[in-house]
Image (cartoon, rainbow, N blue to C red; front, side, top):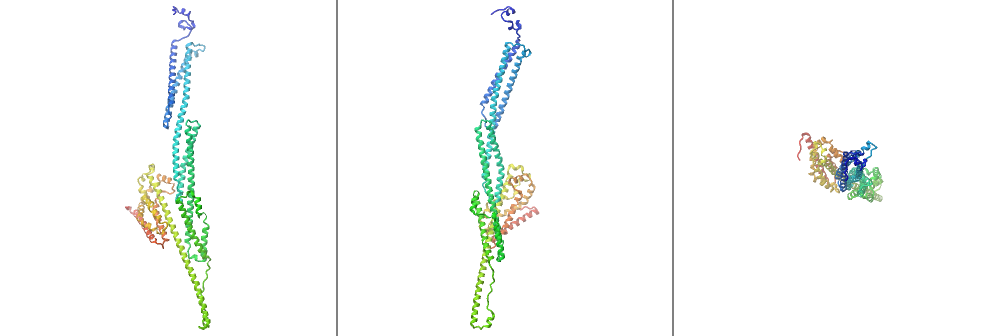
Length: 628
């Protein structure tokens, strides 16, 4: 330790360039400035350290975060992490801004005087701040790179959760479509029924196409995710393949169902044409008067009518049953087979009747009518010859032989005429039996169609009035008025569905006895009086609400061309139809055992109609309501 007594003595030990001005040196130095810089540098270093630690902790938190399995949780997590990251970026920007200002402050002498030479402390401070800024930049760059990877993973996770959610929805829809398509297995019981099923399938096809389009779009989205290097490619790719496979299966199934129904419709319409052709043929036979066919010209004309009718059969005539079985094998269930066999048998019966009629007409047309003249002895023979002469006896014997021969020929002709009349009567009875079967078939077919129409009204309109999703479409005037609008239609439907139709079908082979069925159920048929009694109230309610959105929506769903009022008239039309069918059946059954029952049933039906008309007339005049 050297003790100095003056500043000048200090200069002998330390060069003046290394001393500040206070010690007589040449070095520029401000202690306050040095303290300020050191304090700022130490604060900045602490900020950089804390920022690095915070980023490291946040990075560890992100790295240890498990990916959620739900869309909502993933969305919340992505939003939370993004907010934290934004706050971290703000802290980094604050630190960088502070470092930059500190660096400018250290460089201020150089900026003010380019010839200024920094001392060792200033150089060290400058290097320290630059190193801290560099460290902060590197930390920020590393964090940004890590955040990009983490954000991409979270976004891909969210994309995956959306994809999986949509996949489950579409997959469920495809399964529902497959189940719904499986229900389109019926071939229908009539052309109208088959057409209705096909219309339903066509409407359903729009829904199928929408779901298939959605499945196709979702498959393409999955492919795009995989093309963008999604981390769950092994999970996405099988689902895309499955969607395509199931969609193709549904599409093929839809095409198969359409082809199936089209085939069934083709056969139904073919049977309908054949049945109509047969009915027209039977009516043709019945319309040919037997008496006019006895003449040569009449027989020829009738024969030409039959030949012309058969020649114009065209596609109306069914081919061999084996060909039908082979051509329509896929749509022929047991009921459809029986229907085809029934029409084919009907056609065979008609053709047999045609063949018999043609044979009879050909015989009549070929028959040459020759009058027979009985031969009598001439009067002059008795005058010229005596009674006992041999010539007279010989002449008597000849005349007797001639008369006997004439009598024999006349007897043969009478027998032929009697046989012809018997054949004509037998053929006429066959024609009447066929006509009775025709009326019975019409009764059964219209009865089945009637039951289907009632069910359609009850399901498509009445049930929809209790559907909560349709309640906002129902006007106030229609609220709680279902019984007023539909009356006792449910009772009518259940009676015909469960009882009357089944009992009518038991008379298929003996249509002339069907009057008994009506007589046995005449009490039950009184329900039509109750329905018709309510009809004016129903019509009044319909007129008030016919234009409301509820009825329009129901009609649109059912794809009906006619409004509900047309279907509410069906029961009234049906009871009238019974009268017409019974009257026609009676016309063809006057010589049968069931004629009296038919007449009594017809009278009872007329009684019901009269009671209905009287009741409705009384309501219209007085407003009096009959109690049932």
